[in-house]
Amino acid sequence: MTVEIAFDTYHTYDAMTAHLHELAEAYPQLCTLTSIAKTFRGRDVWFMTITNPETGPALEKPGFYIDAQIHAEEHATSATALYACWYLLTNYGRDNEVTRLVDTQVFYIIPRINPDGAEYALTAPYHPWCGNGRCLPGEDRIDGLIPQDINGDGYIVQMRVPDPKGEWKKDAADPRILVQREPGEEGGEYFRLYPEGLIENYDGVHVQIDPQEDGNMNRNFPINWSPREYGAGDYPFSEPEAFGMGQVILNHPNIAGMCAYHTHGGIILRPSMMKMDADMSPRDLALYKDLGAVGERLTGYPTISTYEDFTPDKSKARHGSLKDWVYEEMGIICFSTELWDLERTAGVPKVGYYNLYPRDDETTRKVFNWVVENVGDHGFREWEPFDHPQLGPVEVGGMVYIWSYRNPPGHLLEEICHNNVMFNLRHAAAAPRVLIDEVSVEPLGADLHKVTAVVSNHGYLPTNLSDVAVENGVARPVVVSLECDGAELAMNPADVALGNLAGRNERKYAYSNWGQQWSPVTKKVEWLVKSQASGGSVTIVAASQKGGTSRQTVTL
View 1 (cartoon, rainbow, N blue to C red):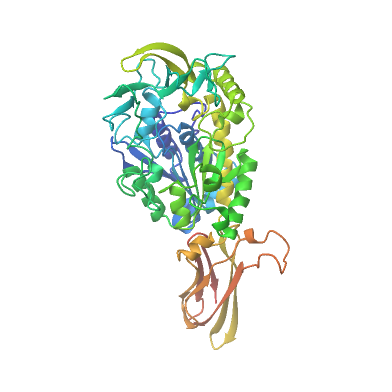
View 2 (view 1 turned 90 degrees about the vertical axis):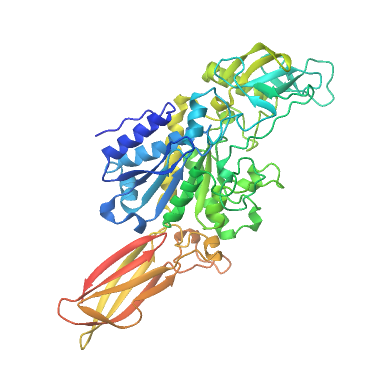
């Protein structure tokens, strides 16, 4: 059975749900589909697990986690996570690497964390909003400007209000474009820009715009949580969707890698979110940079520090985020990928990573022209006169942020999905992989046997994943166990903790006394066993929380 899904369009909740169920029904031997939460408005948050159960239990394999659309307006992320589900399932048995990964690992995918918010952002008047539906835009406000589609065209864009104090002016080459008024410039026609909407309890002077209380679930996680953050919630995990995510992560301790999808910017964000690179573990930082370089090659997106390169005000670092929680507390290697870069696509050189608006007049014109030519009136609304009940004569129009800066047009979507999923698969393939290389039995006489097992990490990452995991005491050792059948253990404990096994990531160059000193990749374990009857056997089990479980049985 072939499952066809269009990846040049954005799917409603019902359409996405139907696609996920179709995949689950077509590939029951490889995937399961469950709900991890019910939203405030009664929708299921779907969770897909993909692995081959015939090659072992899921929790005995390294896990890779993907989530998408924690923010309502970030529709390209949900498309990418759905593509990951589709690509893994439809290419199993056809693509060697996909088949190997599905056989030896497990994928945990939440295609749409925030279905309430996503549905509103996709079907209601188009509006740059990231809330989760606890309340819809404006329902949490009593005073000030409340975003609304005041001219009834199905879009919530901007109002340009004539004001001699204004920061904006019409571009001389194209009056549809607004550019910044220069310092000291006087004597022209100037405007103030506000979100489209009406003003409650207007005092006739100040247009009050308050942050929404219902909003950013990526501030609802239990690390450095602060109620001062926009959308942080009442307390960590107060939102059912975020709580469901937390349960998935905590209930699957085999997760060895993660990717949380966002838009926009065309960048791969790595830790730290709270400190400079110089304050990170040098080995962890090198590991992130090396994996990130693979991502840059596959996606074209640079890998940057969230704190150093993506935090404009270093005194206001982000609190309560997913990436910070899973890396700083659990030591899991996690990236946040910001899909889609409008400016770079429009031919504007990349000189900044956190841009809330075009940088200069030339950039503004290039971006505007690209949107008009490639997105049309879905990306830019012509300015229309409107008699505003509080502000008087204004114009409503401008860039449709959600369909220009935030999400690509449909004809560019599938390539973005594919390239980023390829990085996910390569990151997953870097997981630690613990295997029993060799088991030998040496008869010693008098029914005694020396059993020797050689255990190695064949993966790129170490079994502890990171220095942070070791420092926090959450890195579980590799444990090698001996199980006897028709025999008994005569010497040495049945369970032997080997500690951590290094990955090949630390051996990037030939050995040097001045370079990083190598840690063991392979260790040996020995037991003395007494056979009780002919045909007795022993089974060696090497188990790593992040690197999987390997078994071998030998006859004495």
